Image (cartoon, rainbow, N blue to C red):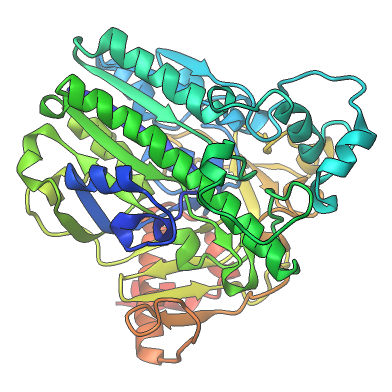
Length: 512
């Protein structure tokens, strides 16, 4: 089997026409929907970027025992598994986090890989003395810095080399992916993982795409939303959203280039295609920008998924309502390649759903390490927060002590102990490292949340915008029981149950 796995970053389901959006023109996503099955209840697992990718590689949730980090020595990776069984895999990506400390073990699992440079703060272009005074006038004060290794500063330097359509990393990413297809489409037994950082911030798109989405804003460049509550002026908010619209339109255009090749080479007959994202992004909804420290609202958690499989071409243009999530991609990729699925996998292949079988799950959990454990059954969503989110007793379990951009500090590791093997670690003991403010990532993710950290229940049928929490003890008890069951299935450490106040439910379950 030949498989193309196309992954976007921060692609909002509500920005795509197949999911009812009207503000952004996405004709190629409409075209994709006509050639594939569209999944209507697909959700994230672990957040944000690299935790989501660890879910995708391993087929199991990791946010219950680890924050941002590499693949671990005991992890299953679909790409490594394919290599062992004779399936060739190739990664093309401009997602620079793969080449940082916190993602450095992912790309090496593929037979070959190609890194497209220039996204966001990718340490790409070297400029020892940039003309900061001139550049200061070009950028909004909230996204300007002249400090070395600052994300805004490096983005400003990189952007000096990204001016025309062909310069943009996502465009060059698709160029490289299409070159792989040109060279290898006649071969068999391969996977192309084509991944672009877009539409992740900064929302910088070629001018021809931006012209389609004007705003009333007249200030300096503003395309980098902060990860915090909305405090911008209305015209600044409009500018950020217009820039997001433009970059989604760019993604749609690049998708169209891939679909053109599949049409021209008649690849629909023998090539599977999966198109999805890692998570969504709040663009001012619920008074938030971003995806990390705020609650995992539908705008972040409910994500698009399209799948075409040559054996199910008769289902093109149909929709699937079953509950699915990110961890289901790994077993789906393996079953598509007719490979065995490792015992540690807790996700479910999507192929039985295409065959007409019932969904294997009635609920799923998702979240950010150290924050709420969230659950949905498709009708209700429940955000279960720790009663004391900043209380001690939160630990990271790892053999790869790396954060996003740096190693764990000596101060963090000084408090580490050796934990017995966990259910997912294949008999390997792990470092148990306290997650405290000593961690460079503490302020970026769940443990540092200060606002909207109340346990709440939403009825998605009557309140799809999650604006009006409800109280229903019967539903809450049922969803809390689902959380316990799913946490146990995914190897959550004992202290995570204590942290969430779930120990009584465990005791009741065991007594029965």
